[in-house]
Length: 368
Image (cartoon, rainbow, N blue to C red; front, side, top):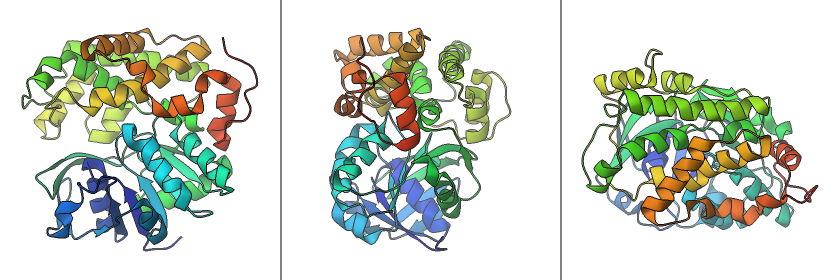
């Protein structure tokens, strides 16, 4: 593995900029590409400044196209909201080289499968590593500054095809250190991303704050009843994972490992995060990824898996319906990746195979 690598990052928002700053701190060479071009405009005249969990200032290299990003990079990281994953994968797929590693931060739906199928159509094989969450959390503010709230101690990951699992783990460790926990295939990663379920409870119980554009502490407002809702949502996810014989972390492990607070009730852990200054700010708009991304690209996948294994995720499903009513949208139909893969045609066995190979074969049986 090269000691100093050129890492192309598709995205230039909070997570992309925080990840770029961490890569630079670790003596790698990040390259940022904004699909719209707007998010990297500031870096033409100003350095990227990261503060919070660490301090870093540098002038990032900017790519002007997906082709340029792929050509100039040893490895690619997709780091933008899931609502943009399909478009970015479509832009990158024609330019990804044989064997060029792609990391999805964080993985949503069956994005790794969608990307690998696009590459297979070109006759290209490239390993894809899926993360269950992002390596950093934070928020970009002003034009060139990002506050990094935390560097996570543990990030769940898997690589498809699974024969490249050791290569994927070694790559991530070379970039970010000993912070990764291998999981058993993409289904485990899908069920390891706790953001959608947590954001469901937080957004649903604080929607008026979001709609009014208030400045509010997220950690402080995970009150005992909100925390209890998050815990109940977690039980639904864990029941699905158990039915699939998959080991995934609990919500308590997630907050402990991500935010370095002692294990207690979820409300207590969030109060500790607030006390120590990294409880984070809640969304200042109803047009937030907590809803527009996490409902179709996170909650909907959990609901589908629950139906397939006979463990209905009734609270998740209720959340989708409530948000759809509030926003006057059909969030269950807005997942572009699931729609493109026509997932309803495939059986649980098909999905289990794809979670290891990265490729969906011909449907084994029609779904009713």
